[in-house]
Image 1 (cartoon, one colour):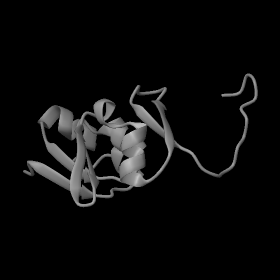
Image 2 (spheres, one colour; image 1 turned 90 degrees about the vertical axis):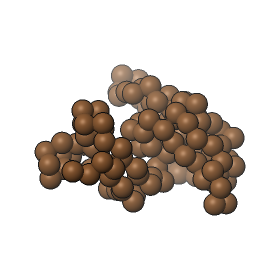
Image 3 (cartoon, helix red, strand yellow; image 1 turned 135 degrees about the vertical axis):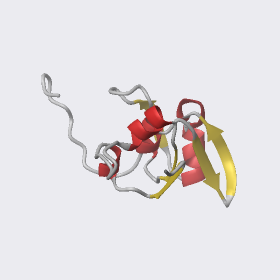
Image 4 (cartoon, one colour; image 1 turned 60 degrees about the vertical axis):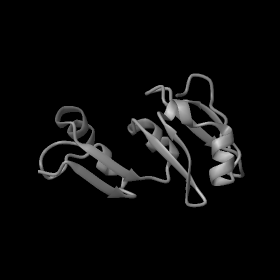
Amino acid sequence: LEAVKLLWKPPLQIFARKLSGGSSLFELNATEQRTIVMVLHDLNLACRYAHHLVAIRNKTVYAEGKPEDVISRQLVKDVFQMDCQITYDPLFGTPLCIPYGKGRRILQKEGVS
């Protein structure tokens, strides 16, 4: 039985999908006290699912801790060279990174969600 599961940039489906043993990663961590180490480049997924984050810059640990204690505009700027706004995920309450930049802009119509 694996005590630690290592995942390198897992696909999005792995968070909800059942693994071969019948449990999701979240269930394995919660019910069997399994340690799961993942490399993720999607900050919002990392904030939503991780209990502990490690941000690395120039091969050095820049910051580590709970997502709500670690993720900030300054961290994102320093580690990823990206300006952003940090707010909270409306479904989970975890930090949510919204990068500034060019892209499509659709204004939400009243009454539409």
